[in-house]
Length: 208
Image (cartoon, rainbow, N blue to C red; front, side, top):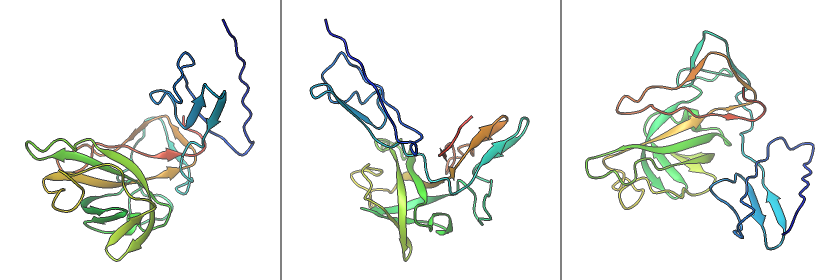
């Protein structure tokens, strides 16, 4: 029989922290339940990391009752591209990504993106569903440079142009809102066989 008491104190500038642990086990971390936390039962230490909610660069989003907003067409902050603009990925080489079409939606340092494999050719479906979030560091000619190399495999046997043949891989700009208030319908584009089927965004302040 034992008992324990845990008190957490957060810095006033910190807004979001999440921890969920199975205290009946001796595992360092219950990865199925935890977000940004690490509980070491052997040392009695709980480390909670910052939850990444974006930097709020795209301002506030309010969807009124009866209103429908599609983030793949909505334009904010005077941009000349949609909040959730996307492009086809042609090649991945570590932290360099080659895409088709305009680089404008992804050109600003700190832009958050989602890479996702939406569909594979017949008998080449192993990478389908692979995804990860990344951060744009810069643009190098016709390539996007990420802050760190991608960790997932999006093609058959690799991520180069040859491996991506037959795979539908998209890079999607992830809008970074401050406050998101939804009383109506917030949506993304329907999957049309080439793109769509994804809704993604960050909210750094409130989400309701």
